Length: 141
Length: 141
DNA sequence: TGGGTTGGTTCCTTCAAGGTAACTATCTCC
DNA sequence: GGAGATAGTTACCTTGAAGGAACCAACCCA
Image (cartoon, rainbow over the protein chains, first blue to last red):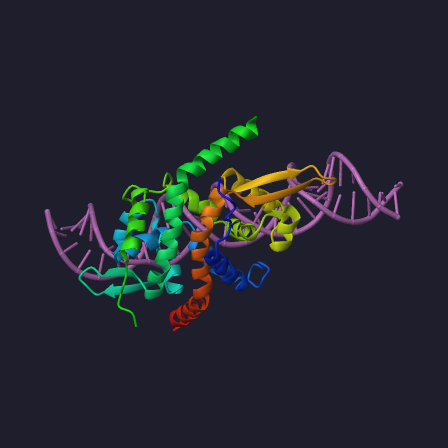
């Protein structure tokens, strides 16, 4: 049994940075964090970021890399990422015009924290699934 | 100007962990990462996690800490976090019964990666807002 | 007797995210 | 002449997330 470490100094610093950028109170709509998190928290953005993190992809490559995304959502999500300055789009006037998407420097700077969270999710997925089972069972009892 | 670091070894390791837990192809519904990210990517979960990260809160305290959450969403989001094993609920049979919510150890283990991403968001918010302006302007032209 | 506090629940409604399918346009291959 | 690949766009529809407001139940105080 560990003592309640709770919050490390580093973590506290990060939190204060966040809370400050939020105005002390987490006040919503004009909250910078939410403004950004709302975008990357959607269904496809983080998946596309991961795919593009490994190497630049063409439109069709992305569609194959993320098989269950619809063409519409792929276009739209790429546009959003592009608008946010996380992804850049390069058209090559080849015989059948081809388009390449790649991370911008800012997009790359997002990968470490993003992957950190995803790695946590991957590592704790089993534990969370078990917790959900336990919770459901306990609720039924 | 930094050289295009692109992907550090550490980051690559994290990505491979994620991709592996995803089956090579990012195949969707049974993807562990998405299963978890879908929950913490909703409108209120991360905000409540941040609030609870600083200290345990009572129901009413949380409502005041996150002023624009509806009572309904607060209840529901807390239930979801509880089901996932990230938050625990303790009822004190005081005169008017009071309820305290606090992070579980797993919840606490999520704070560093979560705060990492939020800190990134806070740090790059201005840059993203500018990128959106530039994009809109360029689209209009 | 009736208002206040605590921690909810229920019903109703709206809005945006997302999916499906069809259409475009150009070039190549069979 | 049609099929297939390139990279999309557009219209339409469904669903689920979220908001608002009212209600509940126990207990306190005055």
